[in-house]
Picture 1 (cartoon, rainbow, N blue to C red):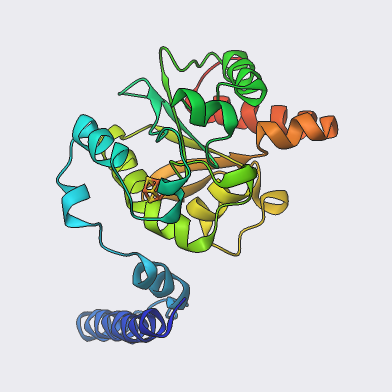
Picture 2 (picture 1 turned 180 degrees about the vertical axis):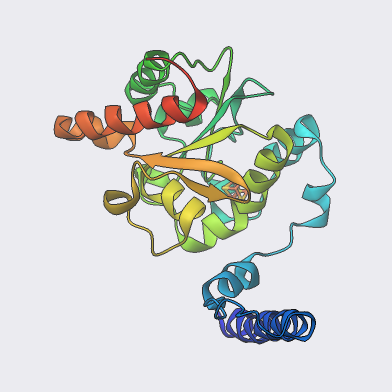
Amino acid sequence: MNETDKARAQYLSKAMDSVWNIASDFERSINPDSKPDPAPDLSKTAQVIASEKSLDPEISRCNLSMLSELCSKCEKCQLSKTRTHVVFGTGSTSPLVMVIGEGPGFNEDQEGIPFVGQAGRFLDKWLESIHLSRDENAYICNVIKCRPPENRDPMDEEIEACQDYLIQQINLLKPKAILGLGRFACQFLFGSDSKITKVHGLLKMYRGIPAICTFHPAAVLRNLDLKRPVWSDLKKLAAFLGIPV
Ligand code: SF4
């Protein structure tokens, strides 16, 4: 959180405390015997609100096809220089579940479609196991839309440059739930200090949408012991959506 956001968070926290105190005073004035609840700690909420940036106005005006078009020409970060294709997203445009991965790899960069390599086939099997598919009721995309060279981790400034596309995709698609895959999706959804090993399988909210994270298919291919927790996380998502498995 930068200094400006910290100042905004402090200001918001004080303002919310004041509102709480005014409401408590009002309640006591009309019912002197009442014992209003003690003020909750609103500082965390203030931090979340303060760090939410407003969307790029051009992006916020886009429908999905305009957004895809805009994204395909994007040069907002250095990844535009090395990509072959922008990998915007694919799947149902009224999805039950929006799946968010990390970023395109070699195959995705070549084809312009997310999750098409070995990890993609693995993901398709996971989705199938809970009666979801990219052809019918799921939408698949990534935190960043262009491939980092040599499949390195995306940098903070690249994620920040790209995040408005993803936020607008979520705003437009309005999924019933979000499934985040791996560390970068987890941090995008639940905050930069979230650890996938700690929060996987927990149902939380992202901008009012239920969201759950699990391990990235590529990580599971490297460590098959992760298959069991992934299956447990997927079953939780299915149970939340009322899908029998
Ligand atoms: S990664 Fe995102 S911000 Fe960077 S060039 Fe690609 S689309 Fe634009």
